[in-house]
Image 1 (spheres, one colour):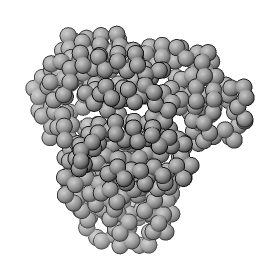
Image 2 (tube, one colour; image 1 turned 120 degrees about the vertical axis):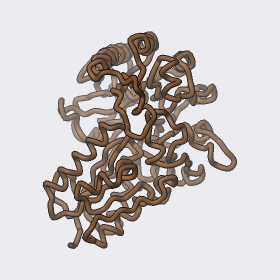
Image 3 (cartoon, rainbow, N blue to C red; image 1 turned 30 degrees about the vertical axis):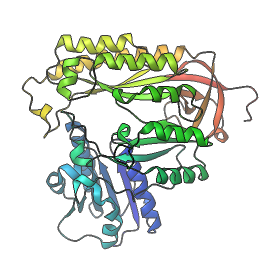
Image 4 (cartoon, rainbow, N blue to C red; image 1 turned 90 degrees about the horizontal axis):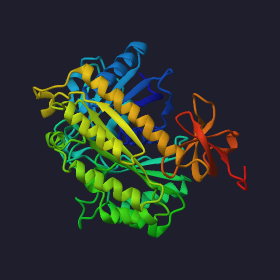
Length: 438
């Protein structure tokens, strides 16, 4: 069959989203038309996630739906679930199972068409996605995700991602600079630095370096856009990082920290390299030093061995610290990890109750953080589309606070000076400040 129209959908992290954007660019360069995933197409590419058993299930559901609703189309499955569980993917009646190291070959497979039996091409998992697969076009987006790091070597006891993404590797600094120049020329007003383990960037380069060197370069060059870090582990918040953020003009005053648990015993069982005390110290140092900083936190509820006392340690730690919001994950056993075979699994009902309490805490933290900005101004990057629920324009302040304004489409994709007024739609309602050209 001749393939001209291709649709892509993505599950999972910003690195996966970046890879899908790069695939879109490669498809357009090969004269394919990129179509919406929920519409008709000659081929469907599903870029999967395998971070938990739950995301495996979600990946299977999307694959089955694509095959059932489009029986004559090619179905290509790639990403982390394809890398780790290729036989499961093939059993779903797909045409191609392509691992992360071979994502560049997807265009080649589409040109070749259906080959009868399913084709499996996983490559060497240790290598991760090749750096030559780079995203260049905007696809109508306001901000650009830029992947600068791939893979992970931390081997947390609940995580299978190192087997899906390979060993940690860093995009060299000179290549990052070239890509920054391209993104600036393309008109992006925000660049989000992403990776599987972003805080490991630079350790494998020669000479070795770390993320602060990159942030120092950004500040020194004074690029005409702002930059945002996607996420870091608590032990990667160094004194030098705090000092850079304290006076930064281009790097946003926003950090997302992967805590996972606030109980030292559970942290050790997770094989995470910090303590609750260190986490508290880092948060308090950031809030004391970085003006209007926003700190988000990843937390897992119901990790094996988490009793009431261990959960309360996590809950009390987060309650007493000035964090802005929480991302809450119920523990989902990932087959093939040490945590999945632990005997002291937590009952699903208990996990649900703990998630509910954490969600209540998240709402309280967000409300308190938002209220602290009422009456102030913020620089807000307005997104390219409207908020689906309210119909309002929406965007993000430098510190990631969600801001809504009532205005015309001419304000989309602009950085605006906005007066922050009141709570609205889970964020803050604002008005374009007097003197701003609208």
